[in-house]
Length: 214
Image (cartoon, rainbow, N blue to C red; front, side, top):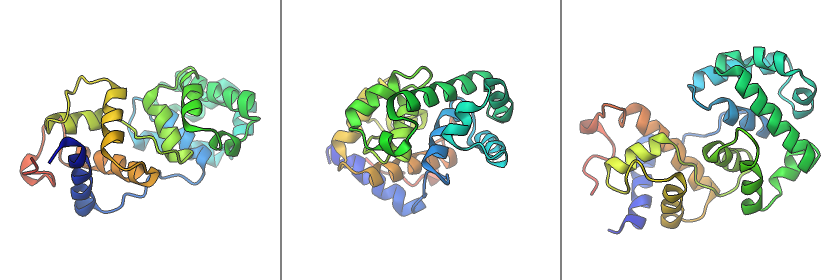
């Protein structure tokens, strides 16, 4: 079996083991975007607390965050950590959204993937993983998200080195899988599930769903 077909085989094993993960947990596309920015360098449980604060204050809306002071925004998202930095990054995204798309998430989502990705990556504070999470989970674009878990699992299985560049890893996956937003969505969620339960820093290989795969 070549490595391209092996990417799909791994997906099938993970899906059989864990079933659908139903990502991203959010009520709106804008909430997904906020979550993608807030989850940088922190646990998702902390992001949920920050989003809960924004929801309770009825502020999970681009126009309302646009009008909100950076200081109050920072206080509300404090549970997510690095709150002053992340408040600025959220503001940067909002400025981009209004400058380029009149504040409309629908207009943002209608853009072509390549152009949209380049534009998002120019927003200060949005790197490749955050950009692609927004593209995939909020805007429904077929872009594979790579994270530290992805590199850990697949380098341990010999697909590539853990030091491999983000975009190289992404190309491996997208070359080895059908182009499908739903598949990329589910695959990344399954990778995270595997990393948290089995392929930890100290792996639990004996009971891993991928045990024995060559």
